[in-house]
Figure (cartoon, rainbow, N blue to C red):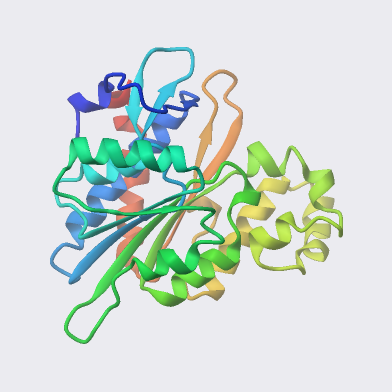
Length: 285
């Protein structure tokens, strides 16, 4: 696993968004899974593909500090056994431009696919960039989705991606930061946000019983999302297998990292991440 580079990277003058310190745990867990996946599947699949739906520019500054760290796309490029194909998508051209420069500087021999646009609208182009499996060559894709809010990722996008390729997902469910904050708005029949997040308009009646039991709205939505993934053929992964990320200051829940695979081996890797990831967070600090 990486050690020295976890301490930070120098300022390079390119776009660098500010993130909360809790993002370090997310990056560490992703680093662990990227490494386990890319190495563990190296001899089992003909090609391994990494897809990042919200790639950003590749660097982020930790709020209140001068510390800059690498984010998901560059973390995926740092793995000991590189993926055979990288696909980076972001809606902001300036982020893709900065990421392209950083990738070229770090790994000049790698030529990822760069897609500018909303991943929900660009999903056909994303699919096009993923190699097709053939009788002579198998393809396994790992897709990381790190949206800013639940309205940034539509379930139909996940459905389309999963139907075109054998694909595992690690999805950030921004439920505590977003869904709880706007619960009264989202439950209205006129709001399509949860409908599109779940790919299901029939969730409201199911919310009535948990609400009476005082079950948290974010817990309900996380469970509903997991059930929707089961309908796509993914193995059941309940709340107990999701990693809750909390704020550093007040220890408030922010979001869940939810992993989904159609094969038990993927969950074996994820279980190792959950077991060892938090203990090794000190490497990032």
